[in-house]
Image (cartoon, rainbow, N blue to C red):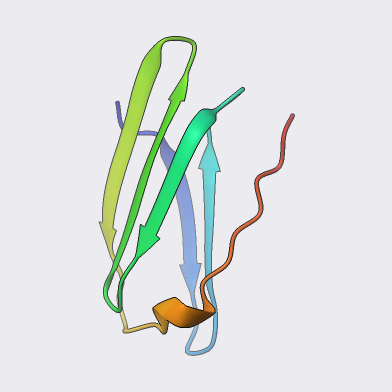
Length: 68
């Protein structure tokens, strides 16, 4: 399944919000031009592959998982 994705990118920052209730087994991968996410929730598998509008520095990538 493809999760709901909210994305915003400026020259210095990229922000993603992926809404999956009770997600687990989350995996994130980012390259200079691509963002990839997989995760599971309630027996469903989620996967999204997203091309960025401008290059980013993967070495500066970080994320926060907000549990709800």
